[in-house]
Image (cartoon, rainbow, N blue to C red; front, side):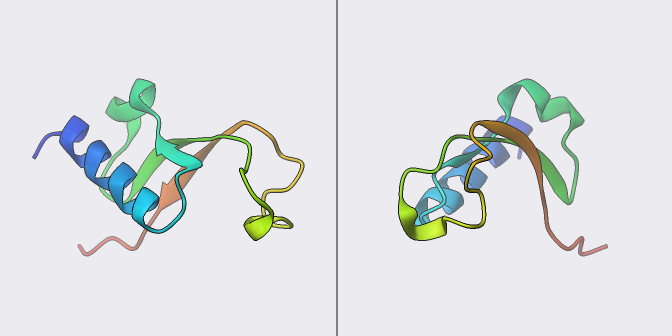
Length: 69
């Protein structure tokens, strides 16, 4: 797989889990690797996650997960 395809898959997973306010940062794909990806976070669309990202507004971030190596 290539990184663009991987980014599309991750974006779809986030969307399916009601996390569409987080998306892979396509401008930083070359910096993303194995167990982390740079993301864009838009302002949260609902009160469902208030308290977690409330008042942060539009931000950049890093999405991480456990590496299987």
